Image 1 (cartoon, one colour):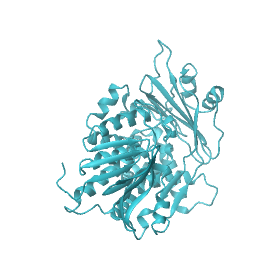
Image 2: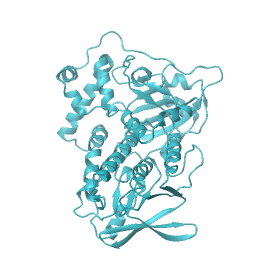
Image 3: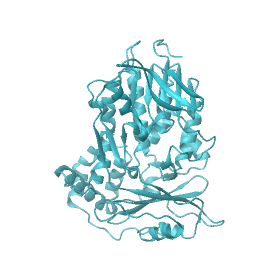
Image 4: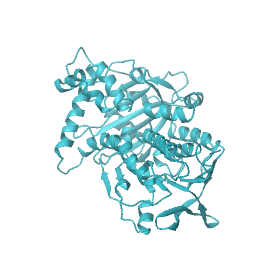
Amino acid sequence: MPTDTHVRHAVVMGAGMAGLAAARVLADSFEAVTVIERDTLPSASAPRAGVPQGHHVHGLLALGAEVFEGYFPGLRAELEQAGAPVWDWGEGLCAVLPNGIPPSTPMGMPIQTFSRPLLEHVLRQRVTALGPVTLRDGLTVIGLRTAAPGKITGVRVRDGGGEDEIAADLVVDASGRSSHLPQWLAALGLPHPRTTTVDAQVGYASRTYSYPEGQAPPSWMGVLHPLRAPDFHKGCYAIQIENNALHVTLHGANGTQLPHNDDDFLSFAKSLRGPVADTIASLTPTSAVRRYARTVNRRIAYHRLARWPEGLIALGDSVCTFNPAYGQGMTVAALEARLLEQMLGNRRAGTPLDGQAFQKRLARVTASSWLMATTPDRAWEQSRLSWHVKAGNWFMNRLIDTVPHDPQLYTAFSGLFHMTAGPLTLADPRLLSRVLIGPRPVGRPRTTTA
């Protein structure tokens, strides 16, 4: 039970990854935490209407897995018991890059692959088992409760029985891309925050497969076939997940036509390099083809507002969303929860969380991931590119073209991709010189079959 009697109740809007991570942290500091979710949540691992991207391949980067394991000890083992495989990134990944496929390179970087619904289900069970936490689903937040323009005191909600109010000392907006916070702040007299978007017009088409009885799964655990402007406008992700299933997401940029049915899906896969088409040709589909196109990068500059109400913070996709192709969303949500934990722990006793300071620090947490996602995505835009975007893309393309022939550089790049190492890793003169010199093939790049 917390000793700070001035902190009693927190409300979290949204029971997605960011909301669940925030609730886990808040449970250590608040007497009561209420998580409000608009969807009626399934009792088992299953997709839900409020997370349409849940039908598509999700990846939890190595850093994100480490942070979640710290908040939920034994999480990896629990997911593994549910069938989610664990494998080494360098050994199990078939990375189909423009200049070749890197050879198998043990990295000691354990990765676990699963469906988004499984991870959310396990985290939801863990969070709701915490004493202070109550989850209320089928409930829609329709506005903020205020005592004065500068102080938030809870939320207004609506369900089938009518409208009500829930009092809170802290309100956390983790409601995702559909957040209404800008409009609610405007109603309080705050200016509309600047919103920046970068749209590569990426779309997804996904489905899952099962292996026929007696057929062994492929030698690889995952396939990564990235997009790259302007020439590589088709790609895919495929991962082995729980229930001995293969989850495949095909994606296309810049308005590429995506498949609608079985034949289109296989034809699209056959247009790609790599082993995915040969693999799925003999497998049994276990889902319909699901499409998704809300992949725009969007950043709302709450950190630049001169005034911010007391008793309110925003995090997750409510503030900064990334093109899911880069797999950063869940990991960034974990890092934002860690920031919340740090700021709650650093408060002086009896003082509320400084929401304005939180938003400023959150902007720094998301800055590098925003740059990693938007720099390559800007290359798809028709407008004239700035010199720093051109330079960033030139360097990143040079790096990616070199890694198939340089195991040490491949390992360094993988650390950068999984956020276990920072960009300064590549400032090492020995690595930087290899990127600047460019690829020098040694032998033939690896080829991988089903």
